[in-house]
Length: 87
Image 1: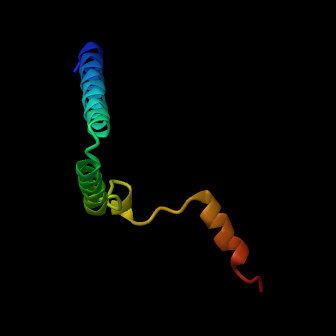
Image 2 (image 1 turned 60 degrees about the vertical axis):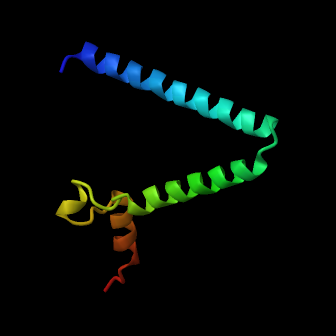
């Protein structure tokens, strides 16, 4: 894929995101303006629930690096060597 195609897709996705944000902001403003707080509470609760389910089901631990085993950083290795008793 060329660099131009990637750039155009990113711009389209960005504008689509901005459109979603604008629509949701208008919807929330209208709910507050017309004093529909009960509906706003229900939508907020459902939104947080969906977010928690997405995070809970995300496969954060499985990546290409973790398939080889746990990778230890240099800080971890230096702490482990410092914690070993010397003979």
